[in-house]
Length: 342
Image (cartoon, rainbow, N blue to C red):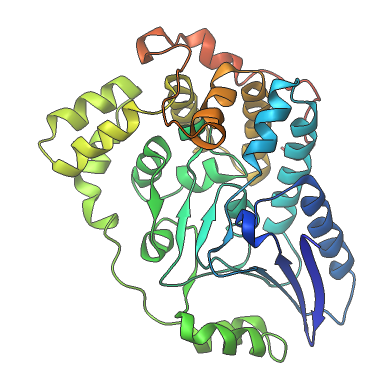
């Protein structure tokens, strides 16, 4: 079974169980998680829901992008349905009526963020790596990630989104993707106690202080450079800053899909004005459906995952060639309508 659904005392346990694929999400897994949450919401004997990932590498590396690649080449119908159910699950998690404890141990990326970072009790450990790396494959941060990034302090979220950068546990806490730091040595005891006592008490008893965030220490140049109105101006500021880390960030951004970069910046700026997660998910659904019809998504996954040559040929190839109309297309109505949650 790709998802293990179990009862453990007061807790309902959901374990993403594809460790060889770093627990990457399939459509069937999304449906299984949703069914369990719907059932437990009405079950008075379930006090807490606990989400973990099988194996030691991470909670979840996101959607099965190889399957996304194949589906996009065939028209994208399957993944439009996948995105719809995934985003509706993300929204349910954000308003779940019982404590939802997500253990974001190890790699937690993309769709893995979607099933964890909207929960009420989000836990990171010393080996957590949290990321929204979508621009690397010609996609745009989704699963509500654009809202989380937009609400991060200053311009930290913009920096993470455009560079496809990773966050440490301390960075994730600083940026609002997590709530508590629990050392690995304390996780077994915490999981046992979640079956026996209220979730907030169990987590508080095992949580400790995280190391300082290195990302937060760089806010001066990050806030200045990424406050610019366009990707081109951001790159100019990074180049002129004289900060080695800023130069490295510029090099990372130059490797990403020019179209995805411009759409991502627009999406984050718009998400800052959204009142609810539902509004952001509606926007992301339109963007993701448009991406399924794009050249860059298929090409990006090919270069990173299928052929692994790390040499994507983006179309358009430069930021200057990406027009306002190109960006606007990603915000147009989705073929399958709205999610009904905005």
